[in-house]
Image (cartoon, rainbow, N blue to C red; front, side, top):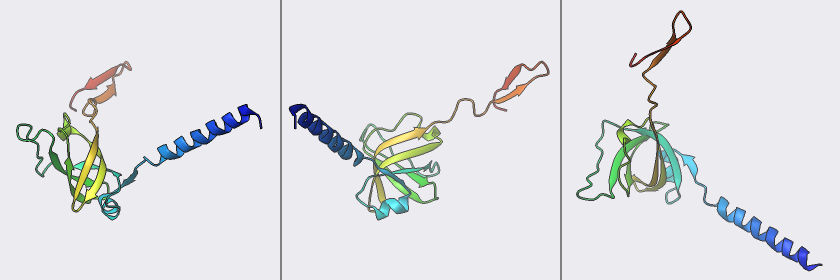
Length: 139
């Protein structure tokens, strides 16, 4: 074999190894029941903030402790603890995606992604008789 063929084989083998190593970092989507069954493994949980329950965040005492209650898409409720600051407009989010692991009865999350409400949700768009767009805010 020529030297160039050996170098190409090594490059291809290294590329395959890198791809396989990177594919192991992906987390799966689950609800809180499935996350509990996979205790210790990272999962993503999609759900909603329970606004009636207490949101714990006191930046004066501990700016890196944030806790809240969330329900997943199946309606399972769980306390979520995040070691970081509370995201801006957290209470206004429509949907949450938390990435983390179950530890006992608490979901310890490492990342929070929020779907924020559209600023046009409450606006009603209509056409008048001249086919001009009319926006009625808060309709």
